[in-house]
Length: 176
Image (cartoon, rainbow, N blue to C red):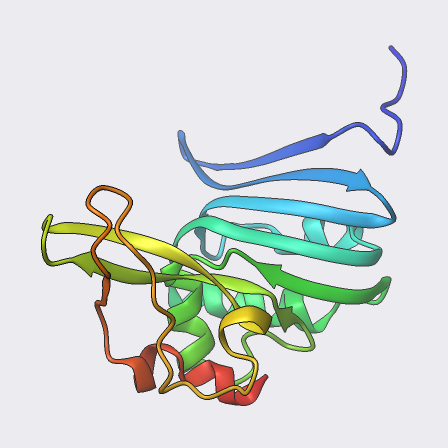
């Protein structure tokens, strides 16, 4: 069996007693390492194993991280702090779970740059709740968390209403 080339995707899964706790996949292209994380970050996430595989410029896609417990926060902070072979790191498509941690835990992002995150919106006309992807550079160029990005409903075209307290949900923007 031949070894995968750097251009091929690498897939690693961590399991916890018959259920997947955290799953990650790699894709190396154009001088970047893209890592997608999926599942729950807890004390069994084995982020040290992931850290040993990262080097150069890294983008962590966190859209599918659905839960993180207090032990997982500790593991994450240690992970994000101890990446000796990583030159640059970005957090992309942060789930609401990750965004909440960015707001609560001062050193949660470490030296990482937040590229984008999901924010909760509701269409009062359709009564539909949706998460919209917010690009930090595009939607918050002046880093003012009181300026809520506007989006339209894909179903009816009405303007969506932000479904949280802007100053709280976007407060991590002030630290970027």
